[in-house]
Image (cartoon, rainbow, N blue to C red):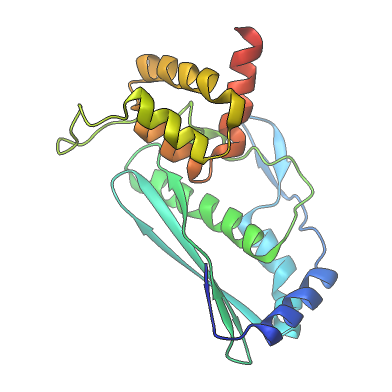
Length: 211
C-alpha cells in the first residue's frame, strides 16, 4: 500500500464514511449456486452518496496478463490526500473476453469493498466459477514445464502465508490437484496468495475431512 505524505483528513473522511455506509442490497442471483449477492453496481450505488458527502472518490485500474487480472484501487480525498492499495490478482478461467470481463468485475467488487471496509451482509459465492479448483490452467508455450516449485519451495511459500501446521496436508492436497487438473504447485500457491485464500482453504478443509 502507498499513500500521500499525510493521511489525517482522508482518515477522518473514511471514518465518517464507514459510520454512515449501509450494506448494499443483494439484488443479483448466482444461478448455479442459487444464492443472492450484491453486485458491483448495487455496491457503488449504495456507496456513492456517502463517499461524495465525505469528499472521497475511488478509482480502479484493471490490467491483465496471460493468467491474471489485476485490480489496483485508489482512494482520493478533496484535501489532496490519497491511498493506493496493492493490486488484487484474480486468476482467469479462460482467456476469452467474457472470462476477462467477469474476472475484472469480480476483482473490482472485492477490491472496492475491502479497501473501503464495506460489508455486503452475505456469504459471497458468486465467484465460484473462478475457484482455484474449477480453474483449468492452460500453460503458454513459453512456460517452462519444469519450472514448478520443489517440495521445499512449496513448503516455504505456504509457510509464508501463515498456514502453520496445515502446510504438509495442504501440500499433499495441492499435489493431488496438480495431477487431476494439470495445474502447477506454483500456480496454485500463487492463487492462494492472490485473492483465493478463503475459498481455497475452505475447499482444502472439505478434502481433509473426507481424507
